[in-house]
Amino acid sequence: MTSVLVIGYGNPLRGDDGAGRLVAGALYDAWPESRVRVEASHQLLIEMAAAAAESDFVVFIDAARDGAPGTVTQRPVLPEPASDDSLTHHLTPETLLAAARLWYGRAPEAALICVGGGDFSHGERLSPPVAAALPELTSRVRALVCARLEASHA
Figure (cartoon, rainbow, N blue to C red):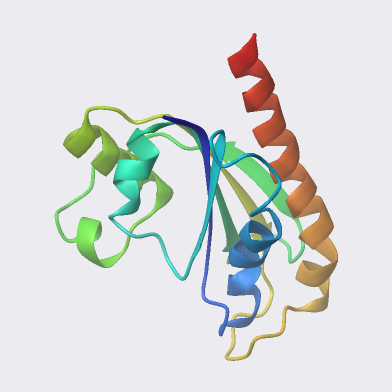
């Protein structure tokens, strides 16, 4: 069982939407694979429910359309029941955890760390506020993961 699963997601061809993937990519080798699994994906996939259920904690990293561009926020994520349609067409962190609980019998604790996006138009470049926020976003993910790893040793 992996202690922590980190999932950075977003479309790298839609400007700021790619921020979560970039952060996950920067963290691939930050911890031993036996303790932390890091995934970068275009979007949340239903197949990720199995990995979530095998973890003690999940960190989701994304760009948000609400909030000031470049502002980093963090909140807990709780499993939220979903319609059958939302489990196959548009997953949120909440519905992914609900799928883990439904299909695998457990949903771990989880958090979502977001950066407010300002430009989701076509292109691979991040807006200046989001590019400037990447170090803070990465640092927040690192701190959260390290705190969870330390807590699991206590």
